[in-house]
Amino acid sequence: MELDMQSPGALEISRRDLLVASAATVTVAGAPSLGHSQTNIPEASTGTNVSFIVNGERLELELDNRTTLLDALREHLHLTGTKKGCDHGQCGACTVLVDGRRINACLTLAVMHEGGSITTIEGLGQPGNLHPMQAAFVEHDGFQCGYCTPGQICSSVAMLEEIRANVPSHVTGDLTAPAEITAAEIRERMSGNICRCGAYSNIVEAIIEVAGRKT
Image (cartoon, rainbow, N blue to C red; front, side):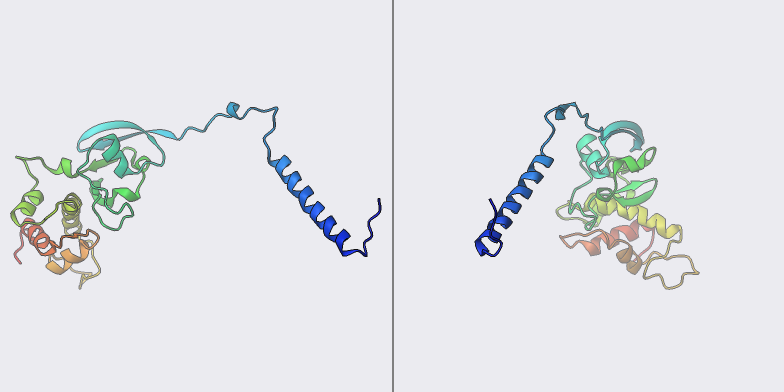
């Protein structure tokens, strides 16, 4: 049967048939082959054995490669002192010490710290044997709800070590002179740790006491 190409209706039908035929071709091409079972394809393993030292104890975990250090500590080791706040590295509640340096545990993968030494708030001190920074926070009421406090304390400990190591900050006036422990330096260096209760002045007082300086 010949189509009259001069007829608008004939041209419209040809376009419709073309679209239908194209859709059918895509559907058939995309369908799985009946001769190959999909269940025979092995799934790639995403687990990794990770060994690190946590609060002085060497531990080994089998973790999904995507597990953050924060989730490894909280969900696998049940060290729930480290808090999950924003989970985006913006509040500092998850701050822990890794090889003596403070980091946001929510922004790093556990597998990245193979062989590392990790200290959480539980490792700094315990009831009856508090770390000086923990005791100072209690004495100066450096917390209210307490949710940010573990991160604040871990960050404070590492921050003082940064000053002692003469690591400058954005408010350091003289880069050639030893860094000083001042209220301005402390506020700048602790700006990554948010206290929604607003206990900042008390936190600064606690840190200054531990540093052996007076306001």
